[in-house]
Length: 200
Image 1 (tube, rainbow, N blue to C red):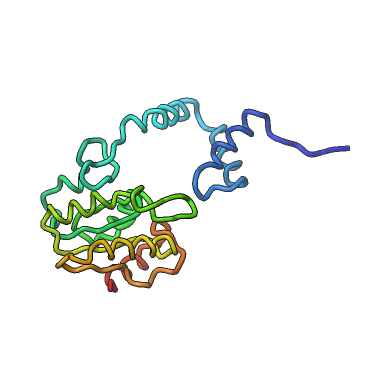
Image 2: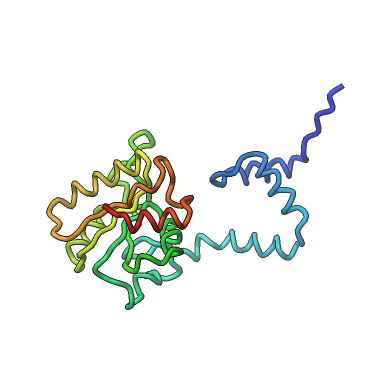
């Protein structure tokens, strides 16, 4: 006799959709699905409305490609930030991680990914041309390459350094307090602070 019990089809679909989130496996997705089932309808309606509208509300900053509700993000429009210093990151969420540690007060440039030939991601697919244009037109004196310490992140950083051979200012990368293969968004604050302080 088969005693295997499976969730209803609608719950199965919800679990599979939740599994598409990064870092979420089947067990976690199942827990999230049943947690949602037990919430009040008002909360679920509000959540669904926010998810449905997020794509139309969020834009990319026209300067740095950070996420923004306007044409220019709050960091690029902040006159207090150091306009001579720019930190290059892979994704917009990396900015949130760096801002939490409060050690960098310049501006950012979001590449939108990394160079990864296995996945078909080439330099021309990233916001590297826009980065080079910014460096030529803005008064940039200090560049921090804050790509993740992965093979793809290192390849991307190396390519950017090659493109900046004629740059007269200072170029540094995050210190190797970061473990190899670690994505920046998962690095704890103390390690990230040490990586900024030990730039090379």
